[in-house]
Length: 228
Image: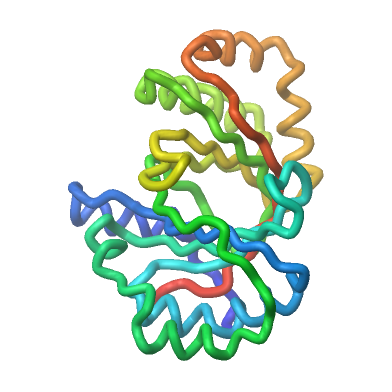
């Protein structure tokens, strides 16, 4: 597969500038397998065909390194430019069925849901991420607080990205998922260390009452295909 050089964030923001009503969507499949290497090999081989058949923007796989809800879980994700594209996609179209038929790995699909992308971020070929599920009655206020936090981290040169999703289906509907990412684990760890610093705690104290932390987990992610 050709090396992925462009980023999802740039593509998404360009498309949304041409269609201001569009809302990016992540389709997320949580699966469980005792053969992650075999499943990853299949996903990497099949992703380009599935992205094209589904009119998706990108597709890849994430694997937890800590905090998994169930040991053996992995996350197969696809990005769509809009709700229209996500809803128009047929997950059982002939191309997808043909690629799934090639999968010779035991796996169980645990959940299959859509998440709204309310704050896009750069998605590169691979990376390390810390994700957190949050419940809040003031989504707008909470997102404003997160924007202030990441802006301050950018000014201080932490080198991390932040992507934010809101659950649209399943048990996580209405849940906010924050994804803090970096190209290497040490950079992400340095950003996590910032939580002990005064400037960080001051910012968080401004919106901590607006949210309830539900679940946190770390993972590595790989992007296997992007639309041409």
